[in-house]
Image (cartoon, rainbow, N blue to C red; front, side, top):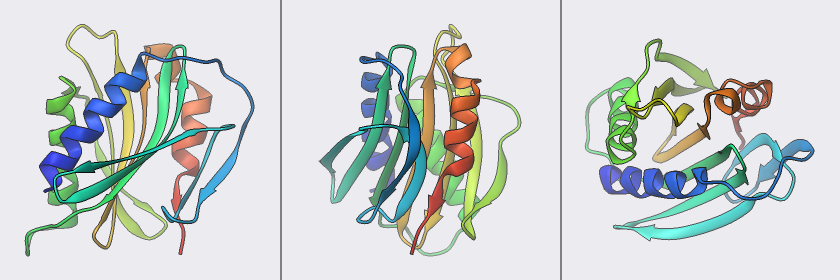
Length: 169
């Protein structure tokens, strides 16, 4: 279910945070099948894997000092509850799996008219940090995030990536 999907997403992100390749030019990329767009470095990697009953898709840039990624999956959700509650559960599952501690200043925002949670965190030693937007569009959960060194996660490139993330029809 959603917890299993988030644990798998977090594991994939941690592996990617090791980094490979270099930085280059950034440009808007669109995913017709994923129904999103974001400004990322050219030639992002695309992956998919089964996570429980859900298929998870990842589009990511692996860089020497971090990773930019958009992960999405159609998830089964229990009836009831609020979007904010569901997004917080998704964030908590990822934080737990990646051994992150939440930062201060999490807040609800909108991404293309859909509810989203803007969040940050860091591993206990502070060497790996994370900034993300968790977004629900119907039964699809999106996680646009940057993970890596403090200088990478606080860079203008990460601002541009997160600010550009949008859900498309």
